[in-house]
Every structure is written in C-alpha cells, then in structure tokens.
Length: 206
Length: 206
Length: 206
Image 1: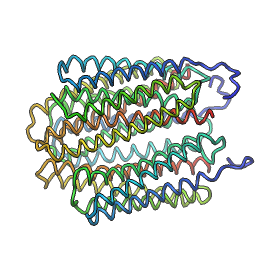
Image 2 (image 1 turned 45 degrees about the vertical axis):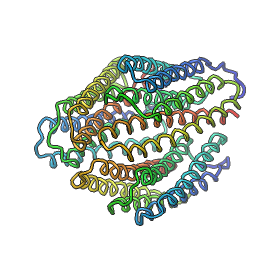
Image 3 (image 1 turned 90 degrees about the vertical axis):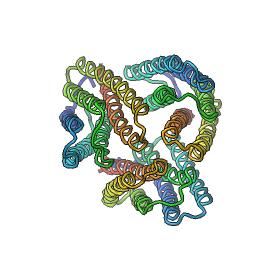
C-alpha cells in the first residue's frame, strides 16, 4: 500500500461520497415527512426514487469492484462499505413504506428524533468517505460520532417502545408504531456497521 | 483465471446445481401446501427433510471449500453463494413451520403467489449455476429475472400486508399471516443476494 | 501454514477465550434472572455492563486484526468469529432488555431453558477457542455439540411459541413473550454461526 507504484483508482471515493449524499437526502426527506404527515403517498414515492437511485449506485460500485484489479483499499472492505450504506438507505426507506402500508397518520416525536439521528449519521458518513484518501484522524472522529449517535438512537427507541407498551392499548396500532421505530433504529445500526468498516480501513493503512 | 494451467475443480458447479434443485423442490412443495391446506403436519415434515438435506449440501460445499486450494471462482463468492442459497431454503422452510406452529388453516392467494415467485427464482438459480462455467450471458439474464421477481414479491407482499391491516381485526390472526408473508418475502430477498453473487462471479471473469 | 517460519501471533486465541468467557457470564446471569424475576432493573444493568465489555473485546480484536500482518488463521475467519461471538452476546442482552422495556415479570420455563442452552453453548465455545491452536479433534466435537444445542433450542422455542399462540389471549402479552423467546433462539443461531467458523478454521489447517 505504501508505494503506489500502480496508480490506484480513486473514483471509488467519489462513488461512496455520492452514496452517502443520496442517503442524506433520503433521511432528510423522511424526517420532513415525520414532522408533518401530509401528502404521505407522494413523498414516500419520492423516497422510493431516492432508494432506487441508491440501488443503482451500489450496483455501480460492486460492478466496478468486480472489474478492477487494484483497488484503493481492501476488496472486502469496499464490498462491506457499499453493502452497509445500502442497508442504511433500505431501512430508511422501509420506515417510509410503513407509513403508507399501515396508513400511519401521526407518530410521537421519537420517530422524528430517530430520523434526525439518521440524518446526522449520513452527514458524518459523507464527511468520513470524503476524507478517506487523506485526513485519517478526521475519519476516526466521524466514526466515534456515528457510534455515539447509534447509542443515542438505541436509548430513544427503547424509551419510545417502552412507552408504547405502557400506553397503547390497541395491539394493532402498537404493532405499527413499534415497527416504525425498529426500522429507524436498525438504520442507525447499519450506519454503525459502515463506520466500523471505515475505521478498519484507516487502521489497516496506518 | 484465463489460462487454466492448474485444472480447476469443477465439482463445485455440480454441488451448487444440486443445492438449487433441492431448493426448487422445497419451494414447489410449499406452493402446493399453500394451494391446498390439508395434511399440513405430514407435508411440512417432508419440507423439513428437504431443508435438512439442504443443510447437508451446504455443509458439504463449505467443507470442500476448506479443503480445496484452487477453487473455480473466488473463495468468498463460493462461501456467499452457498450461504445465500441456504438462506432461501431456510426462509422457505420457516414459512412452512409457521403453518404448523400457528395452526394456520388457510391464507389469501398472496401467500401462494409469493411461494410461486420463490419457485420461479429457484428455477432461474438452477439455470444460472448450471451455466456458470460457460454461458455467461445466460447467467446474467437469469440474474436480471431473479431481481425482477424480487421486486414483484415486494409489491405482492406489501399489498397483502396492507390489506391485512385494513381488514383483519383480530391482532393474533394478523400477526400470524403477516409473518407468513414476511418469511416468503425474505426468501425472495435471499434469492436476490444469490443472484448478486452470481453476477459478480461473471463480471470478475469477463 | 505448516512451516511457521514467521512466528504467528497467538494472542488472538487469548482474546477469543476472553470473549467466550464474557459471553458465558452474560448467559449465566440472564438464566438466573429468568429463574427468579427480582431486581430486574439492577441485574439487567449488570448485563448491560457485560455487553459493553463484550463490545470492547470485539473492538480490540478487530483493531488488532487491522494492525496485524500475519494472523494465526484467515483474516476473514477472525473477522467472522469475532462478529458472531459478539452477535450471541447482543441477542442475550437483547433478551434481558426486553424484560425491562416490556415490564415482563414472569415467563414460562421455556425461557430459562433457552438461556440454559446459551450457557452450554458458551461453555463449548470457550473450550473450542481454547483448543484452537492445538487439539483440533476436540474443537470439532465442540462444534457438533453446539449445533445439537441449536437444534434443541429450535424445538424448545417452537413448542413454546406454539403454546403461546394456543393459550395467550392477550395479543400484547403474546408479542412480549414471543420476542423474548425469539431473541434467545437467535442467540443460539449465532452460536452455531461461530461454531461453523471454528469448524472451517480446523478443516483448512488439516
């Protein structure tokens, strides 16, 4: 890794930055929907378009990986980073889908708080991948923050689900909101997976 | 990869074909059960036997992988392909188990439609692995079709779950059918994972 | 692998033994809680401390992996073994969290039986990793036993969930206990994943 006799393809970094940016767009849109439940169907359709673009970006990275001999970091790490970023987007979209599928017309503030955490994680992920080929200290700082945000999401989601079981007497309504929280919380878990890959990439190159 | 100076072990291809064939058998049996809910226990026991055979086939491939130095394609891809084919079978069986465990005695047509999609994906997977050592264009066509089928399953499952929440007033019955749909839909996701591995194998060898 | 010209780092084995020991501690504590539902909050907090220590141990192994050039066995296997041991602990803790989050104040004997199976699997995992650098036959025996225990957990969990759907008429209570069983059963699945990695390591070195 140290000599760079063979020029490494830096385009992977741009592609990851595009994935993280697209993810941020999805998380922001979901947060807006959860702050103001109107035109749900139209806005979740827009979320679907973003998710579809994310699928294409993931596919492009993996195709490029399969056609590239010398990669800027370990093949397995490229694979895992693309997969985990794709997972964050999938669970973000999956939260949105539940609004339509379950006809959810409102949710406690915890749902929007969780979406806000995904927004913050996406921003950190974007900063981290944008600095992956140079400022390694900054990458590690982003990873620490993404993990902290996941812990925060864990606490928010547990408190919200605990309250749901305390107060919601209608089992079907309970199932709906519980799944909405869980989809959002899982999105933050997947962002932590991505951060763990990024941390590993930095440590290996140290 | 291009020279084949060292003869590569082609038996892996046969083993994957056997896995895909076994999976097709399970999916077909599940479809039949969902079309005609009789003798559930006996027929799900037969499904369990097929699942057990699948476990053995997976185990044999991984054992062979661990004992083979030169593999016909990347070790990680062999591992992932075996794991994802095993996952499709696990979720197919898991749908069958729910019929017994929850004493489900009937289900809307969507359940059988989802099983039919798993049957079609299994057939495509069998065709793809059977052509993996030669007709690469045909493999890619199968992968495209498997992905299309997964999208179809997504739409069928979402519509069915949406209708369930609209119409089913008994929460316990709702939980049962929701999980049946979800197990089937997850089976189609895992088939897509297998297709993605196959696509990668083809692209790397291009 | 046969020559050991380059001294391999054996400290990985100690770290895995520490992870397995920590896991055993968590499983034993959870079993005690499920046998006697008192001071739940305090004891689940203690479980959280153990889970937190487990996170640190996992992180240390992965950091060491990223900084080590010659590893005692395949990098991917070290990664997978650490991840699956971490998963067993996560689901063990997740079962404990549900007791607090859902205010569960009692559970049928099946819950404690499942925790007991996780205890036994943890003990087998500890024995297996402690023998990984020498007594390979003994490692394989442990793997067989871990798989047998997973099958046992499967049967216990299915019977318990089946009975729950037969007897529990309150959907919300049903959801709570069903998730408790599922978290425990998933913990045993993840132990099987760890055993599969260990089996692979042994077979590759044979």
